[in-house]
Length: 147
Image 1 (cartoon, rainbow, N blue to C red):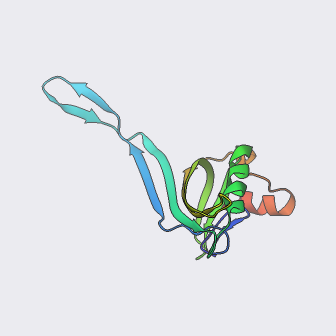
Image 2: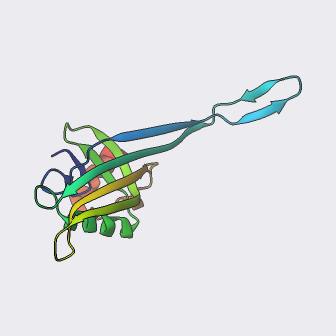
């Protein structure tokens, strides 16, 4: 297992990403001053985004069903926990976008190669109602971990 997003597991058999890109922003708005450089004030943390680009090769590894599953998860509008295979917990994330490019086709039109790009945004700011599809004891455990 490379990583789990909710109950979806990234692996060679499902969907393997080639890179893990993370960008975290911090807000420092400025105020103009006469005769001096603008003054800056730290206003807190900004956006936190993860991008997972990868390649799905239908003959070797991965399946189109994995991309369909991620699209269904995104359609719910819910946030899901993101956990690395090492056990590192990244928090709660929503899918902001999923793009794919299909090339090298079989005679029936199915793609042999699908390049994808999954973009996630962090949303865990204490809103337990954003936790997707977890109910009962499992949801209570997740709420204790993330909140």
